Image 1 (cartoon, rainbow, N blue to C red):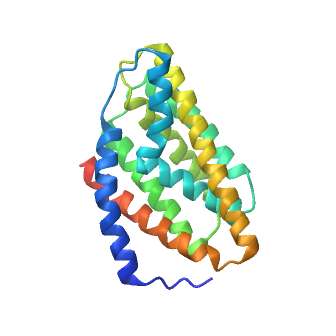
Image 2 (image 1 turned 120 degrees about the vertical axis):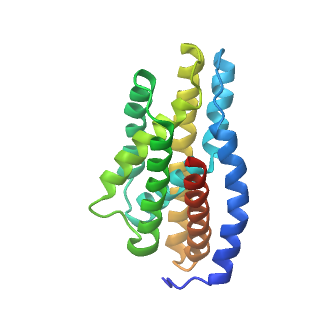
Length: 207
C-alpha cells in the first residue's frame, strides 16, 4: 500500500477537522447531571459519536484490529478496559487535564500505528489498556453528579455504541480490503487526518 499521502490534502483535512473537533470536544467536555434512564441513554448514544476523540479511537481500533491484525480480540480488549476506567473515575475523581492528555496520547499512539506499523504490535495491549481506561474515565467525568440510574444507563449505552463503531467499521474496512487494498488508501487518509486534528484540538483544550 502506498504510504505517500498528498500533503495539501492532508493539511486541508486537518484544518477542516480542527474546526469540527473543537466544537465537538467542547460539547463532550460539558458536564451534565443525568437524572433519568432516558437522559442517560440519549447521552450515551450520542457522546461516542459527537465526541470525536472517542469516535476516532473506536474507528482506528476497529480498523487496525479487524482489518490489519485480522483479530476481534483487540476491539474486545478496548471495550473491556473501559469498565475499570468507569469504576475508578466514579470512586476516585481523576485530574481532568491528566485524563485529557492521556486520551490525546492514546489517539496519537494509534495514529502512529496507522502510519508506520499498520497493525497492532507488541505495544498494542498497552495502548488499548491506557486508552480504554482513560476513555472510560473521560465518559464518567462528563456526567458528574448524575443519579445511579442515569449513570448506569449512560455507560451501558455508550459502551454498546462504541462496540458497534469498532466492529461495524472494522468489518466494513475488512470487506473492502478483501476486494482490493487500494480501496483502503482513501480511508487511511481520512482516518489519519481526523486523528491528527483530534490530537491537536484535544491537547489545545487540555491546557
